[in-house]
Image: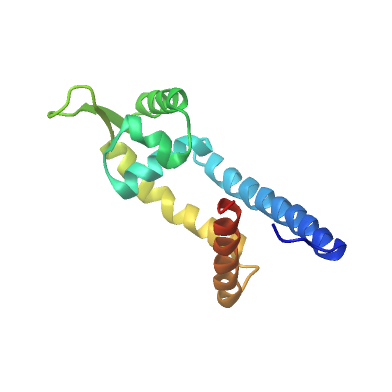
Length: 149
């Protein structure tokens, strides 16, 4: 482990606070946009996954959107009641059930996703293209380092 002097340690703490606050502010704005479509963030994440990646085994969705299996069942139930997805049994393995975006769900996402992307663009318009690229690189570097020990 590398020893840090007091100044470096203070910078690390300050960075943590600034990063946490920025992340919270961005998350809050994204969540606010998602709620405009009568969805919660988890419902949106599942629907967006199905919209962009196609049919998914329900048991695998949790890993992809970082939710517990119990939560996924609840979210899939809610989206099914809204007729935005359907469950479909796997013909090769009856133990596996897929979540499949419905026609209504696809039409809904085709309508709202461009608006959602625009909202995200507006949130990040405070940075130039070069600053966004630098931040992406720096955050990747930070994430890899944080996972390394």
